[in-house]
Image 1 (cartoon, helix red, strand yellow):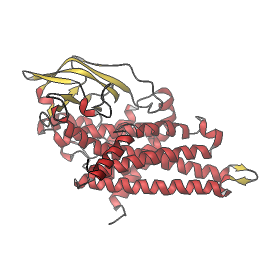
Image 2: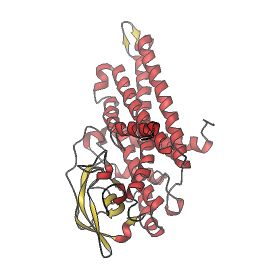
Image 3: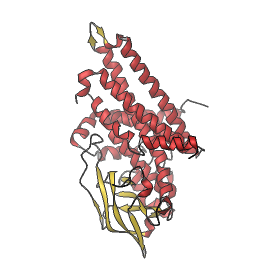
Length: 379
């Protein structure tokens, strides 16, 4: 049991931290206020290997570990939580093609995704199938050498902007075994998008419904064979939950740092806020809970990489703890700033708006508790 990072991991983390400080944090407020999708910055991140963090090197990926990804995304989220979360989703979609696609699919899609010349989206959620993902209704019917897709997906990050959509669609009967994974490319006839959603946070990434109306997709775009889509989707979510948890940790760590610095400077009743024991203890609790969440997330990352028994449950635990803790710590840091924390002059309110959705996506935290409880009780 070794809690120390390797020298390579420390260098990777520092590279991500330096990038976030130079190319993300100075622009995050503008991206948020103007709903800018920072394409050039994303491609700069990809040039460092962040477009295919755990994709194979033979197709342009970095072939790093899940723990490496957690380190990278935590640091990027300090700079801009919303944009770091999109990088997480892009990586999840690319990994699905890398892990389950054939050689032709990997060679066709992944080089452009790893360089972020093209962007990817993950399409599972539907208007009527959120937490109950296995009840999805989007259907793909085989017609010669094509599949014809009809249905829609909701709340898709990158919707309308991404070039590659990794879609879960029903090719068979009811339930999870009837679901398959199909890659749909932007520009395919019958593919369209809803209006951009107006969101509380995550404003630097586009979000829209993805709509299929007699959308004809080549059968060669089927990933992993018919009936394996739900298994692929759930495997992707194990990693996605780690990534989004890491993004919560990054926002929380940045907020805690800002709160401590502010409390040393801000004076009330003739003393710095940092002199008041009640406030010091609240920050001490935040630091403790943040450290505990990080350790669990890093353990889960190593288990997912090793395909260890219990990896899915541990990933659910880590996601639940990291995202709940992340929101609590950001909220406490905002409270320490008083009225100033509520102003856009300070980044606390942006961190708060961005991390709130982490408790909902990649499986709500209620679903995380369901996964954990089923493991505890055997059903």
